[in-house]
Amino acid sequence: MSESKLAGQFFDAAIGLLQRVRDEEAGNVAAAGSAIADTVAAGGRLFAFGAGHSSLAAQDVVYRAGGLALMNLLAVPGTVGVDVTPATLGSALERVDGLAGAVLDSSPAKPGDVLVIVSLSGRNSLPVEMAMNARALGLKVIGVTSLAYTSGTKSRHVSGTFLRDHCDIVLDSKIAIGDAELTHPAIEAPFAPASTVVTSALMQAMMAAAAESLAERGVEPPLLRSGNVDGGHEWNGRVLEEYGERIFFRR
Image 1 (tube, rainbow, N blue to C red):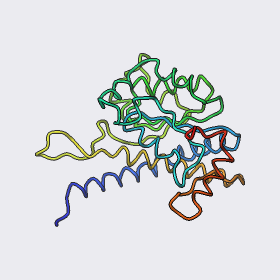
Image 2 (spheres, helix red, strand yellow):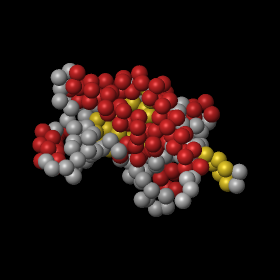
Image 3 (tube, one colour):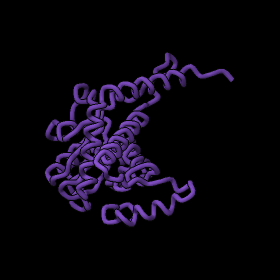
């Protein structure tokens, strides 16, 4: 079977974006990792939030083999994935004012904790208000977004601001507006989104930077192992027990 030209073009596009974020966001990734390490070393907790497909990158660092056990998913019901019916409801909830405040107020997040907010466009009310409310509560906010949207689209929040405007640290995914890397003369709509690949890579790079920062301080990073390797379950059991008061995904 012959190779697909478009499939190869998608890989090339994704690799190009990964190279860009590696080179251009290195300082911000290191800063985010240091902020996470500060919180871990100080006894704080870690949270990640994303809505719609942006939630995939947030979920990828929660209860993850090779990941920090202290990262918890801050879930907003109806926005975590496409399991809600109709799927369009999730998109609608991203535009509801006041929802983020209600979720944060009922969450275990406390001043000094870190919240990583993933939103490709950063323009909807939910991620903007999540960042605003989190900072008001004394959390450090790390935003993972595409800055292209801030100059090429209008905010949907009443303030006219974007996620990037309410973050302590911003990681730019470099994804173009529309999140589609390919076109074809016989296909009307652009296709092949790369945001999940790139954003997940940014999240894992940030976690790696955090582990490195902790190790440099002589602090053992509370990492989880795969349950599919010998001894993995026993290792994870010890980590979850030791850090149980800072882990909320098993309650």
